[in-house]
Image 1: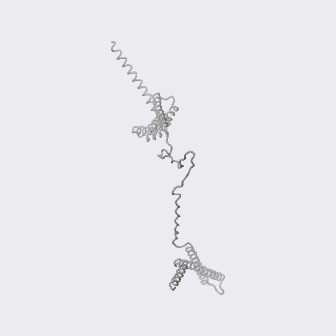
Image 2 (image 1 turned 45 degrees about the horizontal axis):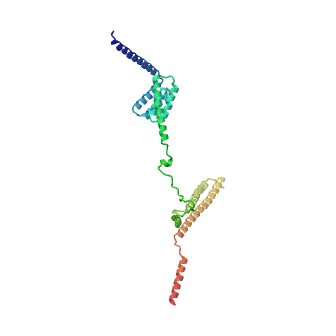
Image 3 (image 1 turned 180 degrees about the vertical axis):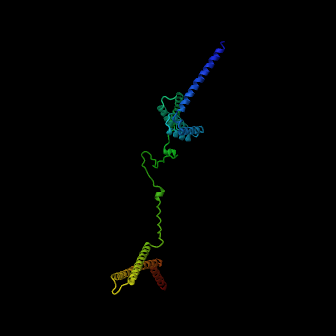
Length: 302
């Protein structure tokens, strides 16, 4: 074997060894993933695959929902890395850092490659948190008045010089007389007054009750007249007659009271309306005009 072929064989051996080691590590990772609680659960796996697909489409908000659903289904530590990375891409690096710390607490002895990736993501998130903190220190939040673009109102106190008395002059508006308030016009209520409807309703109700009592009296009188007896009337017939007589009297009284109530209400309303419609005669101006005409006539006679 010549000296030229030895380095070639050595390089081939090293490359083959590295490929073999990588294959073993990949096989070990695949075997671990095959036994993973989330990937062996169809629901958790579906949420995870949906979140990864949405993340590749830059739809990080929906991807975060999918990853959180998977984490609720199966609490596996590596899902915390996915959630933290998605939060970082959504512009929430402080929350992402908390998820990376949770991952290291839940899986202190995880795969080296996964831990390295989590450390890298955590360092990036912490660096961005530091940058945001520095920016906030350089540009503090403005006060509400400054943010609204308004300046504080200028002082209304007059400028004074040392030793000179302060003279405060009233404004022209204060010197001018204030206009007298205009009288509030009286608003006349239109429509029928309440007492009219009350009187009509009471009178009508009494009339209805009187009518009902009168009908009952007629019914009792009919029973009394249709009672069959031999000789003197029976006690039942006498009771029916007395009841009919009492109901008749009550009906007459109720109908009379109802009619008087309704009639009095109607008459009062008509009288009041009539008084409102009649114009008021100015007695005093007429007397003054008459006296003035008498004086004028007397002056003309002389």
